[in-house]
Length: 205
Image (tube, rainbow, N blue to C red):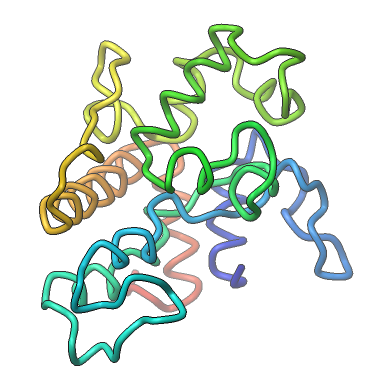
């Protein structure tokens, strides 16, 4: 997690996080709140023959189709970052593991989260995290996922991962990342983010 992303998290999750995600030693302040990538790269790249069928067998970028190169250059961005328990987003452990059970697809994972709020997981795993979002609707709102970002205004998850076309999936993911950026830009966090980027000299005042 870069200093830039830490500052971003502190602004958009100011009512959820402690003072920071990291402590003075640079370790996670609380493993229930770790920065994480929403849509990943490798699982989708593994579906494209020109890219190699695993991370270890990844071919040189020069051999990738242009749409995969474009996705690789765009997916690792602030609008594709959020906070999750470390076991859920950064390991292959836990009953809600995003990579193991949802293949890092946001539609599949969000349906798992919906099931959590519906009480379908015994003993409510990761309650320290999910209790920060008092309902399914609150979870969506605080993560900027509504208004057809990943979920409709009626709370229905938009499914896309069932497609057998990596290009189609990538096109949808990029659009959803852009839609989330727009939702954040219209939120109460926008003014503070603008000042943050000005102070970092990323944009002119």
